[in-house]
Length: 360
Image 1 (cartoon, helix red, strand yellow):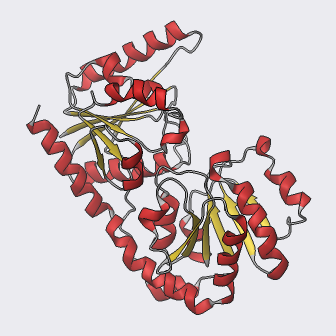
Image 2 (cartoon, rainbow, N blue to C red; image 1 turned 90 degrees about the horizontal axis):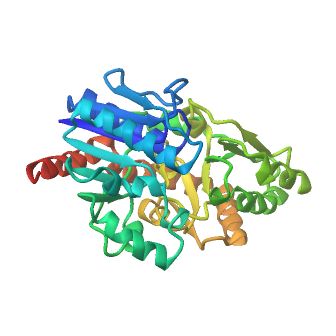
Image 3 (tube, rainbow, N blue to C red; image 1 turned 120 degrees about the vertical axis):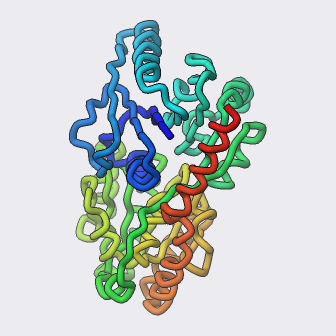
């Protein structure tokens, strides 16, 4: 099987890059697929996550000086790579409109999958736009979404749900729980949709009662978001740390006792799955979409009404005060998260690939 992934870039520290590194590496190293990844103006230098050495990388230069040169260079660059590779399957991992328009630009000569990693709210925020884009999305051979909640948002589209995977890592549970510290962890880029401003407002309530606990946030910083000013306003600099992206994030999961997801919307919530794989009890807003598909409320974590800062703080405080419940959630999370192992998810992708090639 010969695969071609088309994405904007793989140098970042986001969820899309993380997932692609896991899947693409597994497909080439375990399934012996020929995997190609095409990026746009990325250069493939200083890649944040680890990709298999067996993957073939292609980078094309897109001229962004005006819309006409952009479209021309985009089409010609990708077309040249496709003609050179002759893939069996093309997978478009681009949440922007140009990714959605792929069938219009390139036709349907090769089975093509559109893989959506973002919530619908990211750029399809009106009924009219969805009405206009839906016929184009149905030109893809399959539209792959990450959660059942997302599938409901894209009614009328030829879609299928395949969850994001985590790598199969065997840790000694006793060792994991011995490493826990008084740390609440959050991971993600400092963007509006990640809701770290909401988390800081919740933490103000937590800090008043438990000043010895720390909130550590890891992700690409954005000074324009004003998170530092908000921390200073509430005098929380002693208990909140804003950190740059951490490549060895596993060590941070191991030491965390609680994971907090404060997003306004999510495509999936990869960080929840990763946290649970390290036995971390999770608290998450019930944002669209992902957390409800991952956390079993009251069993391995808590789901809180979306945007309710006070209830979010209450659940964090409850887990801080009840160590036995934290450990119970953590042990249960280790079991429940196994359904996301790459071994299981890769088989779903393999069935889809084979089906599309057979129907070609």
